[in-house]
Image (cartoon, rainbow, N blue to C red; front, side):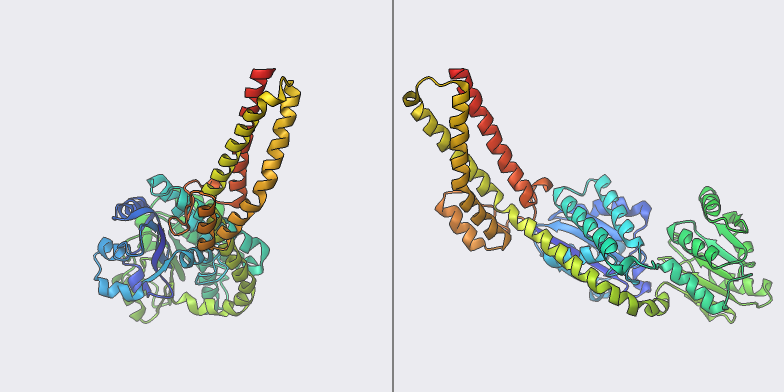
Length: 465
């Protein structure tokens, strides 16, 4: 099986293309199941945010037609979409996933939202039934790597986000937010983050509106500052917008909710006082045509990269340690996966040794005569210890060959001792996530020894006790 990651992001595709393939929360589960139905796809999940759409799959081979899924799903000409796609396989795919979860591939390096978005996508895939043991182990390892990157490096210090950059842009436009009326359209996570930054920066009146009124009221209650935010019924959206100097919009609408004719009406009612729209939604909430009106200024999520660039130099310095840590976690992940290929051989070696040990004890039974239970336990412990000492070198040789990816040596060792072999080429993961580490393999073989040991003792005690 092969790990394949296909996608587009803010680095490879403009927002005009990204918004055509954005997958909303309400359709993510269905789309994930559609991807799982693609021939050759064994497991899958989809990460869809304002900056990326990525398909993470476990497939039969690199030739499995995953790359064409987005074009088919959204009715886009493949020749239009393909130049913007990237594709990673196996270790490169794992490396990209780990970097993405740790926010090293984000528009703003170190932003805290992406890890939660990946976890949410993983939860949706789990519920949809498209995740099994291989992606389960991979994603848990990615989350652990991301957590280490944030906790052990400076990448998460002075946290920034798309929302905070949006507010910073508003400050640069007006000089100060004091006395300015800000209208938050949409009550999702982005709006909440933007609202908190606005309150911190001393914004005047804050208006909040959302299609679901309860969510708007909840957001207003959570961000209440010196002046309580005013909740606007969504049916009064356009009337209320004329009061706003700054509109920050982040809804899940499939089409723009602010169009050129709305902008013309706003300017007329405001007597041409300027308005600034910061559109952090994908698909966009604000029609780009509004930017052609004198007195209305529109910034979309790609425009925010210009502001984000000011953070990049310091963030890049902080990211050096995080990059090294994540690279080490990727290598550690693959060392564990390689160790899995030795598991069947180690278990078989233990089993064969135990069978020989027990057979020799049986042959020696008549020479030993009648022994007490304590004496049989001593014989059992002695032979068990000898077997362990003899098995230690071949077991270490098997593990080392697996860890280093030396399939030729692993095959030779297994052939020499007539042991079964599961090569790394056959599967990049264990079928059981718990067996995906050297420690787990040792636990498994140890458990096998303990069971055999207990069984032998019980037989001896029944026969001679």
